[in-house]
Amino acid sequence: MRRITWLALSLFLLALFGYFAWLNNQNVSISLFGTFTIQLALWTTMLTCFLLGLLLSELRMLFRHPDRLIMRMRRSFRERSDTRNRQRREEFAEACKLRDPEGAQRMFRKIHGAQEDPNLQVQLLKALEDRLDGRSLLKLYDELREQFPGDLGVLLGNQGVALDQEQWLLAEQIGKEIERVSPGHPAVLEGLVAISANRGDWETCLAQEQRLLKMLNGSHTADRQARQHQQHREQAGLDSSVAMREAS
Image (cartoon, rainbow, N blue to C red; front, side):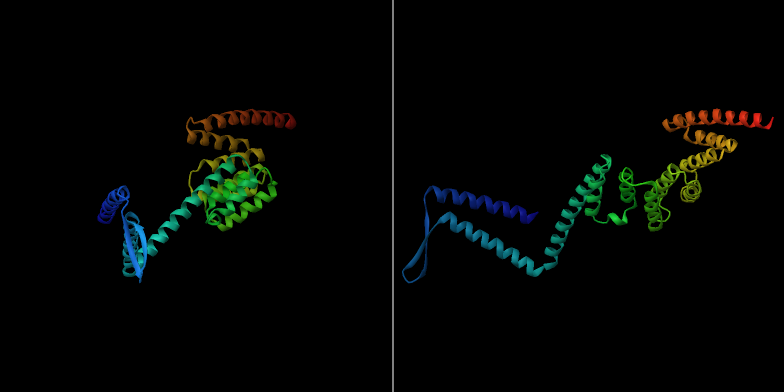
């Protein structure tokens, strides 16, 4: 702070003297050798001397404390790198929102450390859902599960694709992993409900849905789940009546 104050004061005095020297058109004669002289304006001479003094002062500090310059350069480089990386992450998120696979892949490759970030990997796969078939998506999610074992975001994304592709055994396996990582997670019951409904085990399905509705407790998701629960109850009744008629 003291150096900045002295620098500001010196600049003010230099500007003041230079202004009056410019008004009075004052010059300085510098004899180099023999009769050869150079005529310079006084304010130019003062400015040159000030800049030379400032340069010598900085060189003196540099030779005395070279680590400070290195630290400043590293900090400046790191700040620029962080700013550039943050902008790329924002552009990547925007491309994912627009479901632009090419843009998302392009920005993903430019983000520093993206390969070690499971959240970015899952976002990229979601952006690619419109371009890849289910088998390819499942393969990519399997690779992510191997790369990031126990990551909740990867497991949830993988379970969703497995359920969409009706890979019930895989969805059940992933549900067990989710339960181990995050006990009581609603996604586990959602997966079990879908698996039980596919098997036609309506008693288990309806019981699991009731547990899920209690867990969600009147949220927007609970409303959607309640409508699905009602459909399953109706379907369970129809299946039961068909089974009774066949038995009779």
